[in-house]
Length: 316
Ligand SMILES: Nc1nc2c(ncn2[C@@H]2O[C@H](COP(=O)(O)OP(=O)(O)OP(=O)(O)O)[C@@H](O)[C@H]2O)c(=O)[nH]1
Ligand SMILES: [Mg+2]
Ligand SMILES: [Zn+2]
Image 1 (cartoon, rainbow, N blue to C red):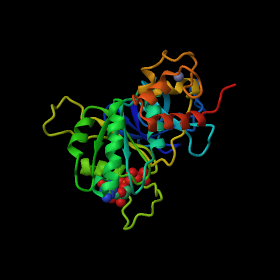
Image 2: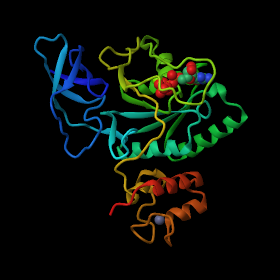
Image 3: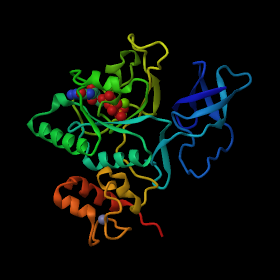
Image 4: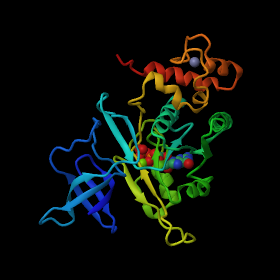
């Protein structure tokens, strides 16, 4: 049987077979994937081969993993030296950002964008909780929107509470496999519940905001989007992956030398610096620093670049 992983708890997987049945599945014995040291060898979105376990209802063993089209990898939150595959085989990656309750930093957004660039996954920024914006947040939102849209990212303003912007984003999901990420408490599960009430996901509903992540969602899980009444029967409605909130987004497998290639506004200047191994920091004749001075690269993005560069371990 062939199926797709819809949920992973670490040792057990929920797999949906091509005929739409859900199976509980596990890996048999030691399962090694070439070249990846990961805390989770298989992730939501992986396509696998299954064999039913004799004598057990709807329980199977995963015998094979199909090649991945792509995947998103991050530093494991529990083992700094290991990777954690967030999801595999995705068409686009949505980051839910909030300016308060909780505040998402630009550093976090930029690390996540770098990862999406590195894995060639289109990235979309969704600024949620717009109902909470006062003058200060309106100004910040406008600054972020201008900065990110100028370098080609799509930016949307949303409020799950009031419904603002939901229809526009719902349209983006049609027919695609989307990964939904963001800090704990930004409203990922609420967003999915608002778009697709039938999902009925658990959200963090308490009065008063502690400012600390509660991590209501504990495992990544994929959902089939309900078919639109207006959609053609043959068109798949799409799938979306809800994920647990992340506190940090640690980059993996990106060298200092590669980093500027994952900043689209720096990538276009590749080859224009005096030195071809320029890291765009101290070197003379640097086209990137020139562009920052001329206002063609946003200074906040350059600062972010320098911070991320400083956090990458040199390779000896
Ligand atoms: N004011 C306001 N609150 C919102 C909005 N969207 C979600 N919330 C609230 O934010 C809180 C957290 O929402 P969740 O959907 O549980 O957040 P999450 O991102 O799924 O969190 P984790 O599962 O921990 O990663 C809940 O109390 C929601 O009601 C919004 O647009 N405006
Ligand atoms: Mg959640
Ligand atoms: Zn340079």
